[in-house]
Amino acid sequence: MKRYAIGIDLGGTSVKYALIDNEGVFHFQGRVPSKADVSAEAVIGQILYSINEVKTYAVSNDLKIEGIGIGTPGIVDTTSRIVMGGAENIKGWENVCLADIIEKEIGLPVMVGNDANMMGLGEVRFGAGKGMTDVVFITVGTGIGGAVVIDGKLFGGYANRGTELGHVPLIANGEKCACGATGCLEHYASASALVRMFISEAPSYGYIVPENGVNGELIVRLYKEGQPLAVDCLNKHCRYLGQGIAGFINIFSPQLVVIGGGLSDAGQFYIDMVKAEAFKNAMSDCAVNTDIVAAGLGNKAGSLGSASMILDARLKRN
Ligand SMILES: [Zn+2]
Image (cartoon, rainbow, N blue to C red; front, side, top):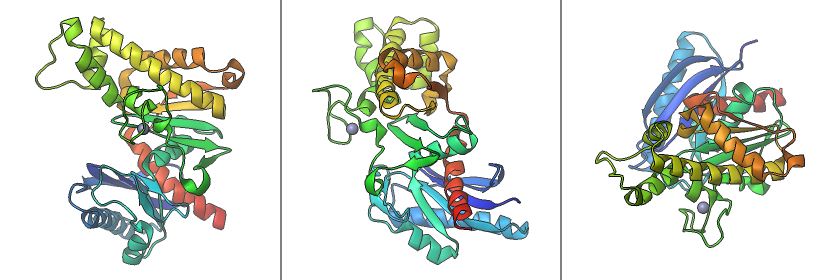
């Protein structure tokens, strides 16, 4: 029997919303600006608008919605109902009783999860990690986020305060990270870190940085052309990321490490570079069952994971 849930993926720029069934099929989807720079109330308004769009579709097609899953930046409490804080990209997004607020307005069960956790869950239910029980997911973008799935379930640490995979110290006495610590994996291996490194090393290679800026895509293109600055920077990036992943392999010994985010679209060569570095550094007994692959769901992973959270929970209850 087909079952349906609403999956919401809240980000700093947009709210992505969809009506998704238990086989991962999207029946309706859309996107609105998140108004993250305005206020928490404005963001909630956009989420409510999105849900009502889906509800209207579901009613006119006679589909029963079991609940609403919301993936949000920041740390979510252990009941999957409250955003505690830690979402720098949304104004006032602290101590927000998001599930209560939405349930009261909409009248459907609501669950809230961390956005990177939802992407990881989506990849395990429907994407690159389908059928696996033990998976580490990391998304490499502006920052580095992640999810750990153990025995088929998201692992969050005590009171769901953990799995901040980007904020594992990598470099002792390193540079300061956005989280306040020094030397974090995120500060050295995110896509932003790659761009920062490229710009700061450009003068020593006699490379003039283009006026319209640099992004990961440009660096990957230059790397493929054999441009020495891009080759040097991407090699360093893969060393940092691979070392970080080696640590995760030694701790969790996953069946699969899934790499998401913009850079994972660069091509198999990129995954191979990271993989070589990770396996060079991981303990071989820990890594013996592990493979490393690119994410398979692109920007749909978050909505799919959010909807899965609802469908998983209600399946357990029934
Ligand atoms: Zn950090």
